[in-house]
Length: 116
Image (tube, rainbow, N blue to C red; front, side, top):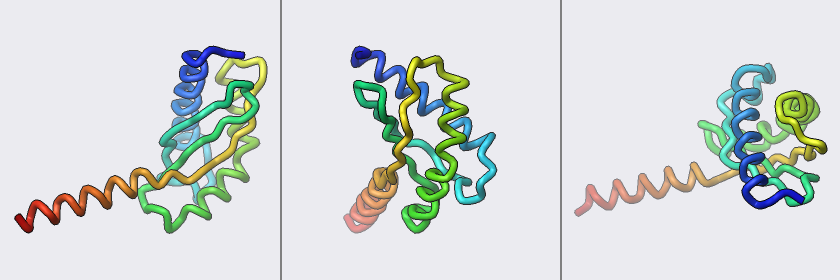
């Protein structure tokens, strides 16, 4: 089993490579303007949980997750070619509401500042 530091490095590399793949290689129109917010890899390297978000917000989350599921084979194959691991984890995609929540909080704080 890899150490915690090695898992973090692998997750960072996954995030970097997936971001590049989504930006340059994936032609699916459902996946335009999608960005990877976080990657978590389990200790056995069996699964990589990939958290994504989009500029449009959660209106397109189902469409984006569907597009990612259909592209997961291609993404996994490309990652295997770019990252040297004995076992390539299976990819699981999740919607990350954090950027939307942060934007909502910022708008609330801005409105409070205007009121005072």
